[in-house]
Amino acid sequence: MKNTLKIIYAIIFLILFMCLSLFFNFFFAKREYKNVNINVKKGTNFVQIYKDLKLNYGIMDRIYLKLNGENIKLKVGTYKFNGKFSKYEIIKKIKNSETNGIRLTIPEGFTSKQVFARMEALELGNTEEINKVLSEVNFPYPHENNNFEGYFYPETYIFSENVTTKQVIRTILDEFLKKFPPEKYPDKKKFYDDLKLASIVEAEVPDEADKPKVAGIFLKRLEIGMKLESDATLKYELGRQATRNDLKSQNTAYNSYKVKGLPPTPIGNPPIETVKAVLNAQKTDDLFFFTHKGKTYYSKTHEEHLKKRRESGQLK
Image 1 (cartoon, rainbow, N blue to C red):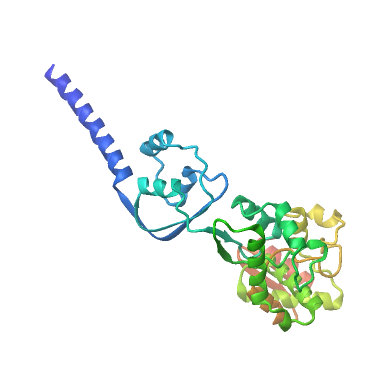
Image 2: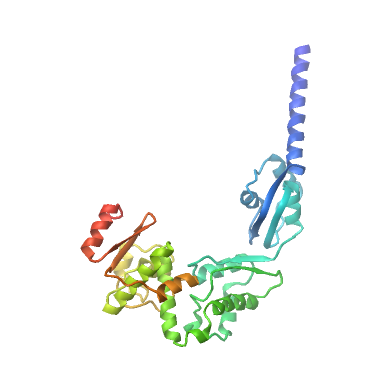
């Protein structure tokens, strides 16, 4: 009987200890953050927020959120964490909508379609609203058929919660104009062609050191009337990786395996560094290149190109 009571007491003590531990870890234990920004988009939940903050989503968290509005619609915006916070304080901060504005990040090489999707997720405007704003913009560079591909400058923008779609678009385009003042580039057609090529170079090679070399190869091909043969141009139009069959069969101005010259528009939004790589392209005797496992290989002839592809393991 005494042994049974001891076991019962031990179990009760263990349960109490676990409950107190969970209670302490949720309400009092704190983790330090140094200027960590959490972007809450449309559809974001606390499970994702915990993951972003590298927190364990445990039993106590599930119970608390179940009892305190787990399914509430979280306010879109950027929540900044700087200092020590308990899980309870993190949840309270987000539920109270203590945002630091709305953070829109446009990565280098993003397409306008990807920018629009990110803006919509942050409730900064849908595609229809964005296109309407763009149709009313007075912009000094070519943008036929309301196509502003290439002009959504890659940067992180912070907007107030009551910002309009027009203000967002104007801010992004103004950033582009700061980087590329219209008076500095009087030949707008040439600049647009350079921007198209920069967008292709951005999609083709990740290393900054390779970009002037690859730009030089593409420029040389254009000069001698050779096709660019960049998978990236067709990938842009298809919205997915282009297959060998696609490259052979797709009759489109964006298929640079079948059509000579540059595509009708840029295929993404390159940073100023890549545009400068095009403006300062390094022309050599090389006419071919490929990138495999982070390394770019250069060749003068097609035979040499195929040989290096086989030797690197890219071509089986």
